[in-house]
Image 1 (spheres, protein in one colour):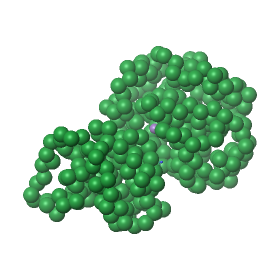
Image 2 (cartoon, protein in one colour; image 1 turned 45 degrees about the vertical axis):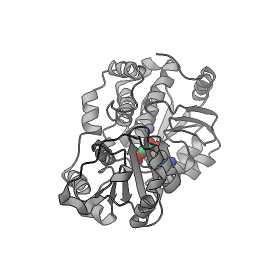
Image 3 (cartoon, helix red, strand yellow; image 1 turned 135 degrees about the vertical axis):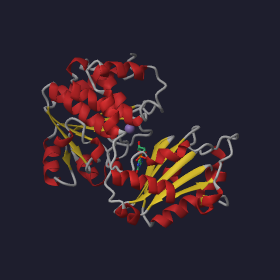
Length: 360
Ligand code: 5GP
Ligand code: MN
């Protein structure tokens, strides 16, 4: 495996780890498999090399990721605010994983940003905008977990990586590549997979827990979303799902229950991008995915105060769900120039014409 990391940055990172006993690891709010996999993977590793290390996260993890070894030891800011303050105050080093701007940490951001200690960023989002002593920012990588693995290999710590740590790192690789179906053309990813499997990691178990386990309520909510809340904007090649707070309540929604939902409409022949809007307590959460290099990150950045990757992005909208939907519809045409020129016709059933939007 080629070391793609700047040797001076690796050296400085190693020095910061060597000279600081107390380390805090942190990631973005509404954490996903890559965010939690990277902080928990590093948590296991740094503990194994004798550090006093804690994971502080902005809000609770979704239940489908609570299988991750160490997840119950994480300190959640929304639940233990004073304890988080103490841990950050006492830390000599903060390692931030899987986010590029402070606002991705929500209410935890001021505490992390105002900390005077050394800071390191490990991330794969474009245009990082954080003050740090060392930055590992590699947007071309499949996941932050891939970057974490490369970093610990470059530091010579592969031996100290144990099965729980390797399980966390492989989880981020699996969730961010949708089980090795997107962003995974770099052959070295499979070398990393091999090295993780050599740690006796149970890949089948990770896939089962992180991707393929659901509840009756969640399954029904996702079915309802596809049946009753999916709109197809044929000329723009866009699929949109909107779920109101009432829809969520009716299905006893729990955090993480609609994880993966936004991907499903991408499977429709002729659809180029899919957007999902969910009415959360504090905002309308927007999530998007695309194919053919269509820049959904631009839509999230321009309309929903967000960003992300070219073909997997998100944002937040302050206002009603209807306003959020109307904002998107009003601007769909702005992005038509990015659509590929030759695409198959989208086949629509005449039975459900009320869900079809040919006119926009
Ligand atoms: P998801 O749709 O899974 O929530 O997020 C997909 C990607 O979009 C994530 O990797 C993340 O980088 C980005 N993303 C999601 N929500 C936001 C947001 O509110 N702001 C920004 N800047 N990026 C987001
Ligand atoms: Mn990621």
